[in-house]
Image (cartoon, one colour):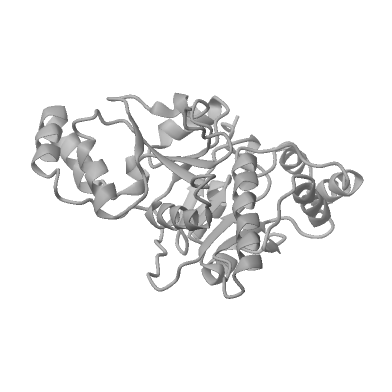
Length: 312
């Protein structure tokens, strides 16, 4: 029987997001492909340092201890790399060095392998190559650009905190379009009139739905282990406020998902909340929010929707 990915949470991650490739990139730019090949061959046994998405991926994989032997892992992470198999060997050795449960990889020399997202049932693709992410989003894939941000990785803390903006990330951008074309009063009127109409899904809706299955697995564990404490925490951090907050809550309910926290900030700077929340990853579609959010949390830009369309 083939190994099925359809019912698991599958995350695709580029080596540029997983590891610090600053030095490798410098060698490639200054010495060309041949120099880069020699450098990686000479350093294949030198582990790469963690990158921006490392903490998120490591903690996500740790939740596989909730799996039963019969069902297999809840989470799969697949390496998607522009390297060829030879130069990618150092990345695979680094994965082994850091004891990460990643065994599957796609290497495509000089090409982005995002075209395989659907084939592998990937609900989130993370990369530090912005052009790859833009192309993936344009093709309708759930992709995020991992920005240069503050890292959060306390080794004494085994929780995983994930924070999402709402419009243009979890939900589509139809309401955001109303906001951009009108004013705040018009936006609230529109959301109140449609309060019982769920939003359409945005790029990361399916990722959140898969995450919610892990939340349910934690609740099941607590039924058999009274000492178990939840490790996964999901937060919504949005510029919405009352009365438009109600439609967002109703939408999440209609999807069968639950957020542990919701921050309806109504224009208050998100950085202030994120600095306290300390998420291991934060997703937002607006660069202006991420410019300050990245100072306090690992930040991912979802370049989707009206706020990312070229200005006329």
